[in-house]
Image (cartoon, rainbow, N blue to C red):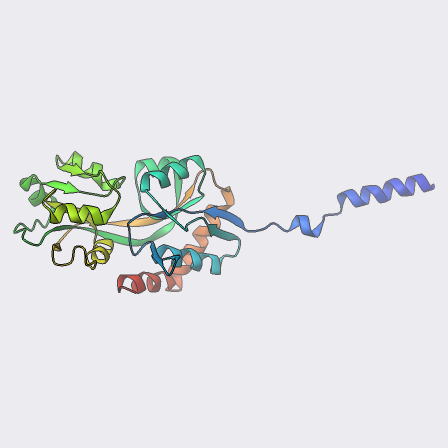
Length: 256
């Protein structure tokens, strides 16, 4: 082989040889937005975001280093989170209920993270204690709910009047305390945290009946990297299998 042929063969070898640095792909980056006014799912403490969801995200990253979450330093409303999932501006959402709208824009990943129980809060002087939807419907009350909550429309379908004008749940509790709405409808975990505030303590109380219980899920945007869903699903399954998911939930349910 002449020198020119050797040079061409050597050049071809250089082209087909994989570059170790290029072959190694970094972790999949998934942006997540923190949901406003929904402790202990998201709580700012010491200038940083803390809570049930940050602990779940950290646990997923620990088990599965091929995925990294970012972007949840500040709160956003639920409608903004849904819009961002739809556009692909965010890749994932932590601990949301299943709705037709969310099924259109994102995928449920893995088994439920945990279950939520929906209850009512009322002004301390309120004498009615509806324990199910039939009893609630008979009262025909105005019910405050968070803006964008999936159950707001469910309550309207039952014929109930709903005020979902704000996503600030402390404002919703203050409304009920002041008589601007008879009940506040929310999951009991968040409601229990909010009722510890000096702003409403002694003015509003949680009623005993559980109106509904349903699972809550981790979501991956349909615009995200297709590999992300399978990776996160395996991590969530492992967190359930080794008991870490239950431990994370218990820490925050106990009022960590």
